[in-house]
Length: 234
Picture 1 (spheres, rainbow, N blue to C red):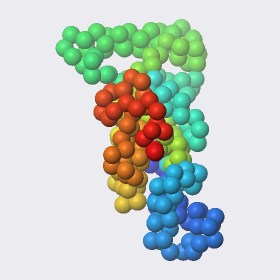
Picture 2 (cartoon, rainbow, N blue to C red; picture 1 turned 120 degrees about the vertical axis):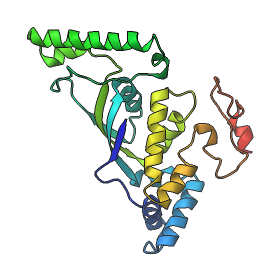
Picture 3 (cartoon, helix red, strand yellow; picture 1 turned 45 degrees about the vertical axis):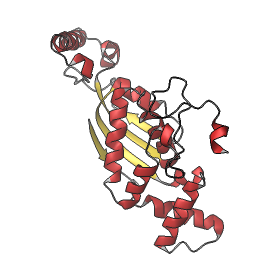
């Protein structure tokens, strides 16, 4: 997959958060250090609304249509535009091959199936079938191109859910790639990635090193399953 930051991705997220929070408090918003400290205080207090002023805009290439359906389920605080199968010629589509289909003997069958679909699609086009109708034959594993916009509050939720070891492998890989890309921007994104872009079971780890727990009934075992979260917070 290929991820490229575009548009108005916020360069200094903690300063932005601290600045908008400072307006609420009537505080000095010209001091960079105070803005950063104020932002961290808001995050530690779980005041999530201020995170909505930080945006990430991303061009996503070579991610399967199936995986994009998973991404699209995070519909609050996000927007995305996807390459249209009505207009784009997909005769030579690329596709995702999961690890289980990369083994000898399996890869050949998998690739043959994808080739057959491509040929079927091409035959429909040659017979005069419009692309928007021929697209019904295209597989979910076909790579797609998407422009995605998401605010930080929603992105934290996305990371918490999709970095979980029980998430679909491809979307886990996507989440890790995006996490790494953002953390390389500067130390502010590095702090956010280290402390907030973690599986749900480690969401509050930066507040209390011992507070790592899972509320999923089908827990992977990374951290203990706790049915009643209120017991942990007491």
